[in-house]
Image (cartoon, rainbow, N blue to C red):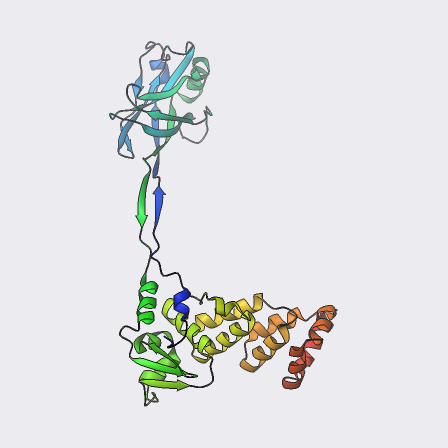
Amino acid sequence: MANNSTSAANHVHNLPKTSSRCITESFTATHDFEVTNYLQLDGMGVYKFVSSSTFSVAGYDWSIRFYPDGDGVGGSNGNSSAFLYCVSQAKDVRTKFTLNMLEKEGKVKVTDRGAIECIISSPTYDWGYSNFIEKSKLKSLSHAKGGNFVIRCVLTVTKEHRTDAVTQPNLAEHLLQMWKDTEGTDVTFSICGQLFRAHRCLLAARSPVFKAELFGPMKEKATQCIKIEDIEPQIFEALLHFIYTDSVIDDERFKEDKSARLQHLLVAADRYGVEKLRVICEGKLCESIDVETVAGTLVLAEQHRFKDLQEACLEFMASRKVLRAVMETDGFKHLVTTCPLLMKEILEKVSRSD
């Protein structure tokens, strides 16, 4: 970290982050109950039912009960009834289900009953349809289909809500704190008189250039203190911040003259082979192009061969109206002086636009 200067790390929110989440689990299953020879069940009596086998959903056991002559409730005379029954001793079990009759193959619906949402709890363990289907319709169907049909139950059981604490990944925070405290640092960089301490293994892991400088055949002789002349302290600090945290620095100082600082950081990222940072900086510059900065940004893109950024600048200047405004800036005068060949590309863009 820099000596005798306000470190960017001090502006990062280092307080531990905590969070929690509410988890609601639901389980859905389908059970088909095939009924054969309905005509032999017709007339067995009100209140009497046939039952499916037991099936399990969300830790509870269930069955389908079919009353050929109705359950005797809610004006079910002349209708067959169908119910979902909870075999388990249930308390406040939230359910949503449908019961529908299908032809034997299970492809064509005979009924189209809507979903029932209910809470299964003592003393009521069954919910369903007293007037499930008219017996006359069922008899007619039975004569045509041999008395065989399927009652399909689609059941969803919602478990109780629970709240769990979520542990946030904190590797970046730990590394940032080690950098801030200079704990275990083993290499120092001198940038315009300011000293930045760092961990050479981490630098080498994140940057092929640092790896070559610190561990390669051409490694710096004085690896305890490496002097760098052609980079600003704030930019080098921002580069190290990304290396340690994998995030772009959020610092008030960096927001002043943001475009210029992003340009310098882009060059630094390219120089040290920190590819992810290079892509981020190039993308941010492409998004923030304006009349005042586009000419200078284009010169930078041309000099360092940032093709995406160069194309974005040329596209921005493709209209005559925008180009006239850009030509009034000092940056454009610098562009004409330093990169005169770019004028040809600019004019070609304008021509194609027109």
